[in-house]
Length: 66
Image (cartoon, rainbow, N blue to C red; front, side, top):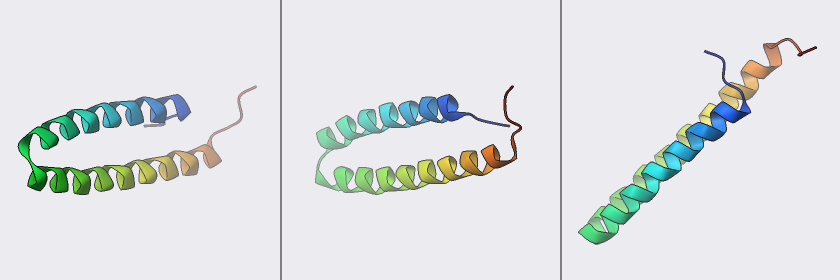
């Protein structure tokens, strides 16, 4: 599946919306949950960075639009 910048942006928005929902729930649950949330957020950010690299790698092989 090929993904363009708009597709990556859309995925980032979905991840961030889910992250904010998780942050609100973790904050309400207490400090232990906040720590777990921060760890999950770091993993999500790492995943997004990997996704960006994959899209950039794909773009190298895509023919230019004419």
